[in-house]
Length: 124
Image (spheres, one colour):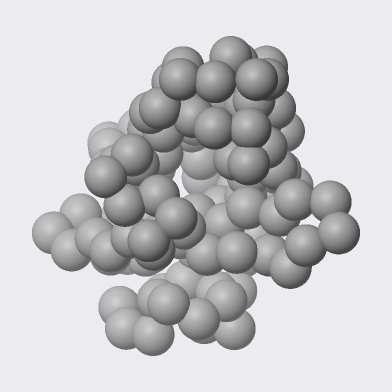
């Protein structure tokens, strides 16, 4: 089993930045790929991007491309999402998820383990 805990959310003004963390415990973290998602009220959960187990491969959806960076520190069992130039429409609960797969990371169905999420609120 893998437990994931997100942190780093909060209230930020438009144009500001946040670094979200996803800390893992349980199964060997370095063997897991991790995705970042968000869900705003009344909207479907949206995949933002993902990083494979080694950190050698990442991808991003258009909604965060150029503003978001996913990285990982396997020694700390943590994956990060750095978000810059935040906009009010970025307001959502941000969640991380993990999978033993190294492919299909663009599909939420590929992920087996989910965190509870951290709230990000961007004021205009």
